[in-house]
Image (cartoon, rainbow, N blue to C red; front, side, top):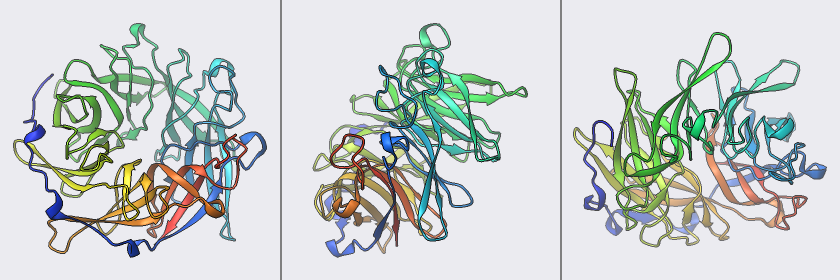
Length: 434
């Protein structure tokens, strides 16, 4: 492993179990859902479906996201049901929402403009949108794209970078996760393949004065215990990058840190190895920081019932301490197999989504709240999905809060329409109000 290493706690970490965790009773589910949009509302699903990524809000309260299928761009070999879209949902005066497709992928030959976006978007200070799409691009190994608002209601797509532009794909291949942006407007993300040993990369893209972008590989995986990155990366206050990966000492996933050095390179350190026991396995839905510099995330599997956990990683001078703050059971008053990362509300409570559990056993939005003595966390189901009456179910992607505390997200199934060939619905955008 390159550079400085932190102490890896592995199986020796002390994990609080049954004595510190409580599950709120079923009566705690008190939020209501509104379906803002049902995908495949237009013939041929030109409005998209399979919205797997998270949503973002602009200052006007408009929602932006991507769909992995649908749209007007079609490639018979790559995406016969449509190659995906970028969409906007705008609130109307009557409380309804209007969907506009800003861009349909594979609108040019050989999908050089990208195809099948799987992650959410980010906004820069000028209101431009950025994201990733895999496959597509000049070499067919995926792209980073920019959408620029022309001011007349039209958006223009620019390919910021086409991966595998260098021999052996040492510049990365297959960007499946979302991006982040720093104060200078530089973009950061991951690829699941490519790099020095074809195990994936963390990259930076810097804009030049002439509008061209330059890619720098911050880290190539495969030179240490980690196999490849899973999901995107986030910054801490000191400018270090954190993310999650496959592999590790137990082969069940890691949390890693990348630290910039004065000579322009970055050093990698594993700050936690998942063991597959009570501490979970299969991280990859993203990480969040609290105001004290503690990291929070979930695993998809492992835990006491093998349905995943929510965890906290707390730094000290020499190492990080891992605590399980909840082990999912999949029962009606709980979630199971988390499908999103964790986000904080203004009160310091954590929210996330799962594809299992809930009162209707069709997925849930769950809430994690600290106990009165601030020493433990208790979990409750904030909303149980239900496809009856056109509701969505099986949520995907991270949740997003607006200024009023309303939650927004997407589901892969349910909704009013079945034109995508799915008899259980093509998915929805939903709002959950307190």
